[in-house]
Length: 357
Image (cartoon, rainbow, N blue to C red; front, side, top):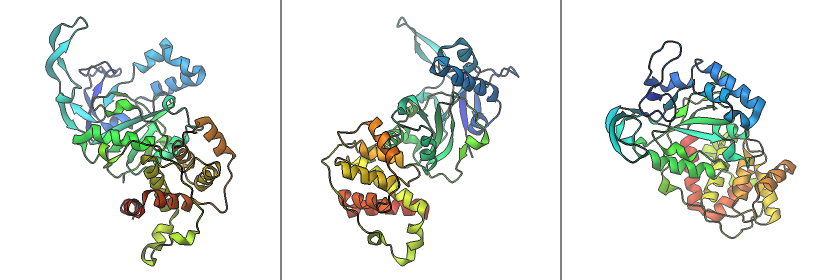
């Protein structure tokens, strides 16, 4: 796994591949994704960057010591291996010249089949606990690798694409899908030639899923959010959701239930369904999600459908809510069925079955 070759660069401005290994003096222009992401060779530099960030906070990024240390780390285009070709370039004064360049989509030799995503703290300031992002993303079936960025203030992951030739369409779908859960991805990740800096993590912080499922989403499959008028839902008995005896054990599995609730929330947010306008309904939604592995993010997602949404107030309410003995994830499932209809709900169940059977 991760044996695909990607192109290596000295920094984000390097358009040829001029990274020189400090120990061997070798110019390295390609490397396997495993060697780039899962090696100890970057550890001293990454640990120093994180120590500076820990001591000086955001100011560290402007310090010369931080800048010089980061220059020791190479970058990689994890989505592609590029060829170096002579091509027309433009100077700042507008004049043209011919020079060897790489990292242009027209110079793509081979797509690796992977999409690298970045999740930065700065883009997700609305989350009361940014570390919950790690729990959320690890639960996603398309995530094959997740680890901290070199600064330690974000995460980056690798997603296997089902349609690498439609890289941008798949990224735009993923961007919308994660936004539905309150997770903002770096929008620059849609560029196949985007360079990301090397990082390092100790094994306890690295997540690897060798059984990751190739992501099949495409932009046209994920509608824009359109907030709609509120709707009310009464709590219904769990027996309403009893399944056929043939698969009852499967549907009673807690991980399956969590995934079903996740997809129901995602579908309602995609369609702009507002089930939190009324305060009592809002509280019930919070109770229903309180026991979910990443209920806070789902709570933000559904709350954001209301024009009353305020990230700080939502985070505060989440902290106030205790576990309910009467309101469960079935409340979310019922809301999904009522707002989207039986057919769409059946499609959600089918997806859960195909992913987790």
